[in-house]
Image (cartoon, rainbow, N blue to C red; front, side, top):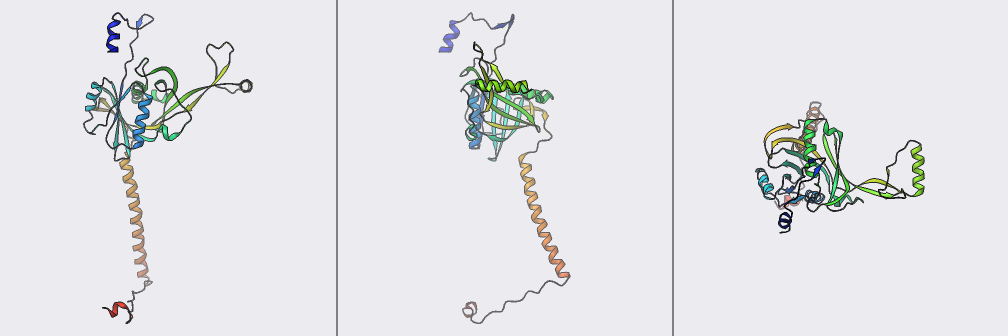
Amino acid sequence: MAAVYKTLSNPSEKPATLNGTTVKKNRQRVLILSSRGVTYRQRHLLNDLHVLLPHSRKDVKLDTKTKLYQLNELADMYNCNNIVFFEARKGKDLYIWMSKAPNGPTLKFHCQNLHTTSELHFPGNCLRGSRPILSFDATFDSAPHLTLIKELLTHIFGVPKGARKSKPFLDHVMGFAIADGKIWVRCFEIRETAVSKSEARSNSNSNDNGAQEATVVMAGDNKGEKTKISLVEIGPRFVLTPIMVQESSFGGPIIYENKEYVSPNQIRSDLRLAKAGRYARRSEGGTERTVKKGGLGLTSAVREKTRNEMDDAEIFR
């Protein structure tokens, strides 16, 4: 009722303008949910992302893993235009789907090396519901598919200004870096600490020698006191390996496929074959040694065990 009253009470509200041009309001909402069979760490990672994204809505687990097009109907029902879906396989592997509903595109990632906020025990902290600063590696502009991934990550992790449950503060940074063909995701707190006079003198001396220090002048402070800005990691942290990009939302042709990606099933299969190969080589080596000793006459004949007449097996036979 409050939203209806606000709409009816301000019928002449004009859109925001900047330099005579109308500014389009950023209306992004994210639907976060998982499939059946997720582990506790994967569930905690989903909860951490839901806390970091105040414009997100968490839904119950999805029963199917094949009919993913049903997620578009759920997003339309909850008035969301972004979808983050956690797909668990065999209780070990985690695949993260990110889609722009209802027209696409869709990104599929393999999530590895995930660590939740509760298990990392980092000293960093941020205000619940605050907006993040998104930091992307320059490598994202080197290829078309990386540019597309950067744009979709911006829509999902970028909290709109004035979003519901969000607070007008910018106190943490989400970093996305590319290394070894993978996307490394980290979250840091922006911490400001006052610099004492002795530290200021030492910093000025070091700056004279060519070193640089992260100090700024506090806004609105007439005394000109300096504060040191540092980044303290909060968590969670995880690594995303791009697998493919689909043209539409959970369907359509594949417009990009990572040829260097190897599925974890294939890796486990190769490890099992390597262990089986070691056993086969040991067996072949034992057979070759037996044949070689037999050809040299080094093998001894098998002697029959002499039985004692007083043994229980002979008496009670």
